[in-house]
Length: 129
Length: 129
Image 1 (cartoon, rainbow over the protein chains, first blue to last red):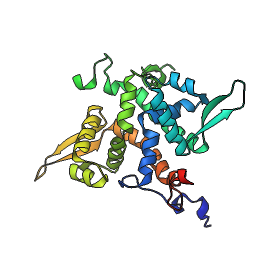
Image 2: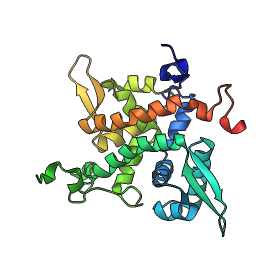
Image 3: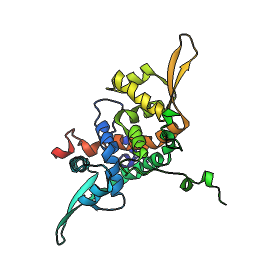
Image 4: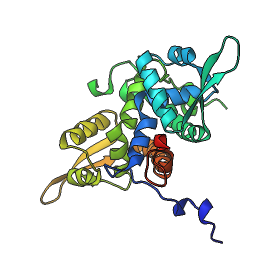
């Protein structure tokens, strides 16, 4: 059987180790400091602007707007005006966004459970021990 | 059975959505633009400085040095002086580094196979269509 349309190897693919490959930009968008946290915050379902701003510690309005715009441009996040009273805007993951967030969650989990790598049990940075 | 030492839930863990949680820094180190590419480059085995510099398109000596130092500090990469003639230095993943790189590879693969998301089949940026 030769079903090129369904074979991942048959599709054109990038090479992130090449400086000028657009896959590197896409990789950068989904692994950016705020990109990761926005995507993970949307994993539970659609969120309003104010929920994202409140839920992601330390993010500024400017960085949230810029991150959402970038992820929208990549086809990873969808901005949706909800026809309710009063009207409001929600952000949610596209199918591609869910795919990539499913891959990001294990990384987030790894970082959260490996904090002792960088901070000792006694709270001192690992480098100081 | 209660085997706390082996239960992931029993260990202290961070919360990357909190601005001051050290897990966010660790997450940032492993998902930084150059961090991802250095880790992925070390996945195949130990590499010398010059091999990394050559293999990662666009990285400067300064950024490579800084990235390796950060990942060393996190206990993810090991710097090893090899007792050969002439002596040389190699960088390799620690056990934790292999763990995290195994999680990064599917993300890299996702980005490389989803290039059409950001660049159309005809080479134009998705936003221009």
